[in-house]
Image (tube, rainbow, N blue to C red; front, side, top):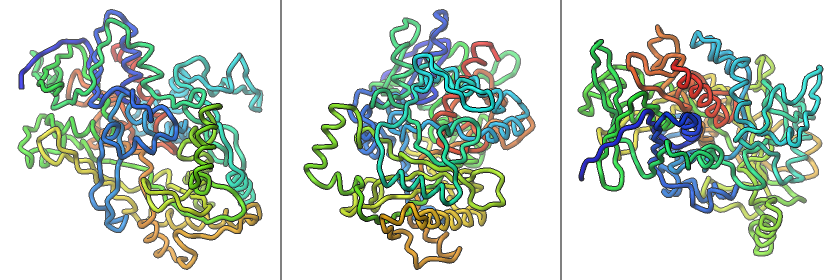
Length: 554
């Protein structure tokens, strides 16, 4: 393998959700030479762009890292597929397209944990709005939302990140929304104003029925800039270091593998690691920043002993399945030739129907028990059912009522499995490893049953298939949750930010690696706690704030 070298001002490792936005913002200054690295290929695979194509992108080495977890005790020793985007756009090219910020309390909590009020809800709102292009503000519209406020107080227009309403509906989902209301969950028309408690259809990141990824939104408008270089199929091997005249450790760049060559890249100003909550800690550990005992066990020189890879948090969805009658679901529609032709024609002609749908259409946020002050459960309700993700749909009409604990107390780890950058890391989520999480799991299944028992659902004569009505005790339900639960693909927290004196924090509040100059981490791994909802929009917000700090020299 031959060696080559190249020099830039800024090097961004990872062309995913955060990396594409950063590449756009950093290259806006023509005096900055910016390199964006992506281990995967360009996003020219057709199924990326058709919303339902996530079914063909997850579990496909063309677009997915193909990771799996270690056997998990909380899931009764099951191994899970752990999709991560390996393509320009990263996870935004294969995810469920749901636009969800979380709750104001998430960000106010970050502000307290970091000691930096710039992370508060009040001070992150501008970063959310900076790139947003919300359909409800099209053509100058600005609906009144009550209390003399306008929709534009909370949302942006004209940015790169398109937010649209879904282009389909199902009678059975409308009925579920009515049932949720009968169970005490109020209907809501905006999940993103700071308190997402309520039931309604999710807004999605689509444009005219096509998936809208960070590559389309941020990279394509910038890719012709002469100061922006984009390398695909370029995988980071390890970061490189030097010690300055002041005795401070500095990241000078990295070594990467590209087209059969080992390439040394120098960053004159900064390396920005945006490889995601799994790959960012892996790269840091391979480079000598991580738990000292782990690094030594793999023969890696310890550059800095730090808790990299700890604090893994994820949303685990418990997939309760109910058979229904007297209505159409995707199960029956897609199981006939006529139905499939109808689905295809509807998308071809109108960019609507099932091919335009995200994995989940209807959402609800509520409390697992009345003692909680905030919603701690998220429902994803789907007009379909199957035994496991990747398998065929059932041949009878059914819906899946997936519910996840928004604020799990369980914590996992990401650890390198060897010193070889091509070997996948060990992913240990430790789902349902605390008594609190097991109790929330049991309570959430009971609540799903309660909603399905409301009058609005009775015309469908719902029959519980999973977990099964014979299971009633806390212990039974927690155990059964382990059998039917799956990741919802929201890993965060593995390179968390915090105060300078917080030994559990790898980064300072401006996302700089503590004790190292010239190195910053910008992706979902920086979250000290997981947000109360889907994690794509918060990751874009983090990148927006980081780009501003970098431009300002902070």
